[in-house]
Image (cartoon, rainbow, N blue to C red; front, side):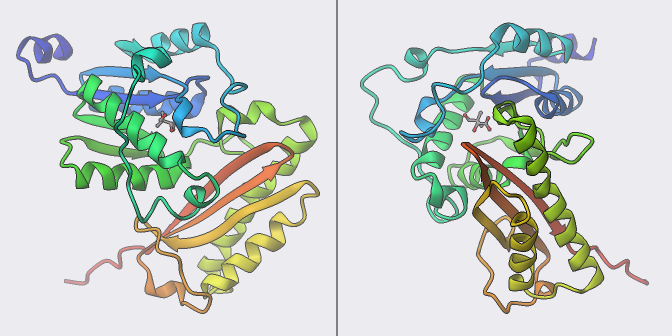
Length: 284
Ligand code: PAF
């Protein structure tokens, strides 16, 4: 009822969930948040070729359009937008959206051009869908920070809503790429969430007080997995993603992101945890 009235009065809030499909419970949580906070929910499914590097998994990226549309229906999505590559990138195309600074670190350092591909496609999707709100998962915390920066810098009238990471019961963060993992590598990949939990506990108990204490702890934990090859195991300020010097005291920061990118065989997984200073309740 509220939806119909909002549409009729022209005041409907459009909530947008951009995805590359192969939807899982993490995406479902974005659709649920969008449904709660908007009148019309739009989901896009587009495996964006320009955010993949030449040796990355664009061709093999998992796809299941039929199942995705069914999931969208179950989650109460109103419109599913599934453009083709030609529709999104009619040739010739000569415009790219690039955010500097925060895109040069972490995933940006190991995947050159990746974030230009993300910000270009997300701006195009924003222009097509014209949402008031857009929902992104915090598993890609750097992507959230980059998109927030873009929206701010380009005065896009869109509220970016970050949504919590969804995990399997054993701690593995949900990702469409988890299907690539063999049983053995999936077991090893649990080291990511275990390392992040250990880092959180070390901060809480005061056994880790500097950035290097955290980096050491992460590397020790991840090093126990036989096939793990670390791309980065880092701690930085959030959302600026400014790196912390080795001896820098963690206490000096209000909001920190501990972020991991680790390869298990050919599969590169990312995961992270936010460490935010609790507000001390005022006595007056
Ligand atoms: O997070 C993703 O799935 C993609 O990077 C996005 C935001 C849909 C852009 O292609």
